[in-house]
Image 1 (tube, helix red, strand yellow):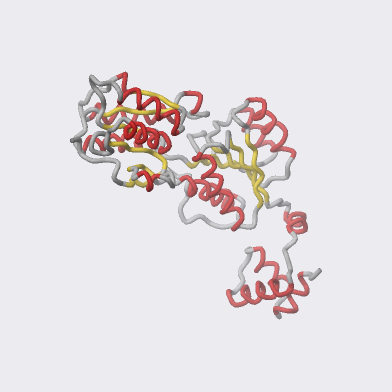
Image 2: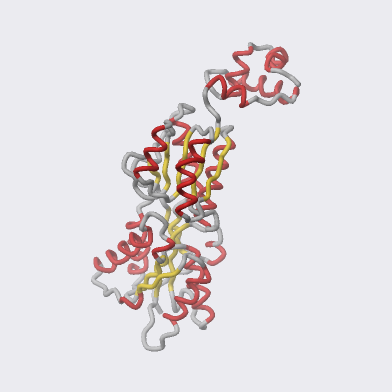
Length: 337
């Protein structure tokens, strides 16, 4: 098996230059870096991270704790984080609590502390004081994605203003009968995402001096199927139905669109729909949405972790202020008929 010395001889540089070029640490000219990489590839040399971790005290492994991987947002954030870690030459160890307290307790009290990790990223988990103490006791840098956690670098979107913007868009088109489809409490995980988005919707309606009808504040489980039946029930009411829906997720917005179509209603002529997420199927549904850039949130969390570990410097700190979102206008919204 070729050694680092063999690579140095083939590239015509020192062993130290090979080490810096392949680790990405230290200054190496682009010409030397290219020669080293070419020599390593020709020889089939692979960096031994076990050896380098013994020398540096690093495992080049980041723990990622999620409440579930079965929903679009979580899996998309995870995808973005995984891609960024692979690019940086790091491994990812996934801990799925499955929304169960006993699994969560096991992760924070044992598994994270037993496994050699350089840092931990948590997703929509509001860390408890005991969990924070356990991580700090072993010097684990922590970056969170989701709601604000005092004392922890957190990547989060402004859920209140996102929902307010969605409602304002519909109001600006001339809609006065606007309903809201949020998530039930058991699906909000640790942070009251659905509540914050409902508050934003109600604020926009209040600012426009429009009534909020309690029967139009409905909840579902953030799935297409769950939203479909809830919206169908509202739209099937022959006496009075909304002309628009603000949906707290894109998947629920898809359910709303399908419910309207199955009742013979046209989107957007009879019903306008706005979602929140940036789901890849949004374009197929023609869904107007606010893209919260889930994959980029995962990549940004990795970038912040690597900056804390001294791997690179950040041009823009993703934990300073709210993470940027993007309003995407498509065909699911129009002025009321």
